[in-house]
Length: 228
Image (cartoon, rainbow, N blue to C red; front, side, top):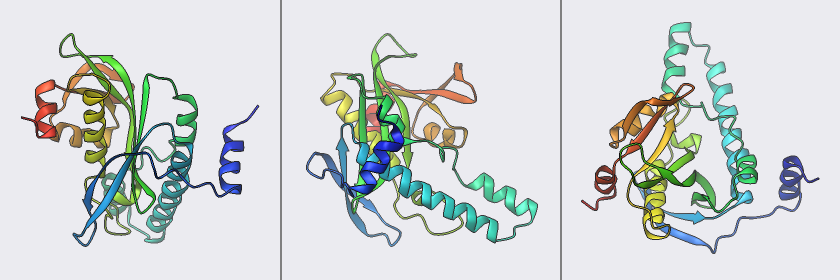
């Protein structure tokens, strides 16, 4: 039986590159120098890009952890740094997620700049809304590359990658899946502020473990997309 480790080794040994032909959307994001750079969003099951998320994102996070250790922060300073960074998803294994989430009810999105994954998103559909009786989609996982988050080691490389990939998922869900505007997710604690800022509503009764359930209404989703 082929294992995840076997797949990872095969990708590495054969230096397999991701497909660059199946572009779903493209646009621009600002880099650290306020310059616009073109991004491409790819849709579909993609073990090559998922493996790049694991290897590149994991290497950066390990480097960040080592950097923090090397600064010899006092305890109070260390606590502030720990509160300011978001590495809750450090052990997410994207290749494993691709392996186990490949049915028709799932859709994958990867946002690349210079052939490097800057964000990834997996949605499930259809999902019953907690707001009304309509169907929406549910974000199983969404994350941006750790170099696109605030950290004490270096300036954030790109701004807005998370918002762009979520907006892409919304557009795909409405145009290709026939769903109405609106989506939901369970948020990692340090991401709650972002979801509240973009107009999502928390439903305490649907909290899962330590992750609160958030949903964006049809109206707020259209405002987020600039439709209203």
